[in-house]
Image (tube, rainbow, N blue to C red; front, side, top):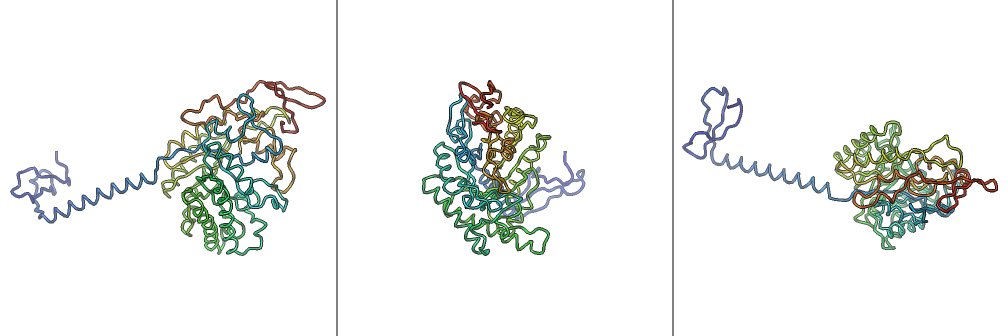
Length: 462
């Protein structure tokens, strides 16, 4: 049956092959024969060929932006060396003390993220020196251990002497009197210095973060984004220039490394941030997101975060990774020293769901758990106010709540989600429900398990 306005091919035996038959008007009337000369048909054929070629090119371009690369099951255990210096140890399922990077590899991790600070041994929050952790020497030592364990490496530059995040991006003390040009040069020099030291050990770095959660800029005040001011455009340009100084330095040392620009709150729409960053000349090869699931509604927020990630990938045509995640299992009703089993099974479900959703979408390249190795109420050296926290358990308790080791220093069941999808045995990842006996000797609470005795100190178990 003919349809009005439809283009028909020849149905009669035309006297010339240069004729076509096009229906015009009422389908019940005789079609009109419209002559096309040979040149017109040649042009139409050429346009058709061009259209097909463009379609093929589009498919090839899509293929180039969707390479066949493995999905990174990653972990950031940057506190491990500080924990080890405090006497904390890590154990496999059988209770054997195990080097932590090898332990992570054995449970299915394929990558690790290593935090970099500038001069933490001489500066820190409120002018209090933190200690020799996450400085160049510590980073190189951890990179060597990670490489020996067979893990891919992501280097995370904070460009600060302490944690940089949306609430703070403190300029390193050594750079305090630098003008903008000097600060820009310092960013590049610091990047080259650390990466050069890693490369000198024969180690490959796969990804580099130029700044940590830089949603408000970096290296304040030089690179701070001045929202709602007349200087907003100029501040975006300064931030982009500082970030690019890091980007270019990375490429000098590791030309093939993927450079990441990192934003927090991955469940939110962050597209305008990256659009504006690019508008002012900012460069990046990959988008990095922090995403900590909402414990009360994790299925919905996992779905939303996956949607946001996919949108960023489609908009900017660069891969995206969740470079930080974690989920609380802390039971606040437990007394100090009492076993913190929390609800690791629910945490496992949270991350199994997240991996399933994100691995099903093109563009997502991996998920990294942030500091899962913290256990037993361990607390790092000083808090954000420059106050000593060792042996108090206060600041450490917060981080332990997002940890994924049990109180005996073994990986817990939420890390099942990070296991290799191919051949890592489930038995390498432990349950929190381990048989143990609690005893008091000379007024000291002890935990006995598998022939080993653990001493409880505050919230810490040694």
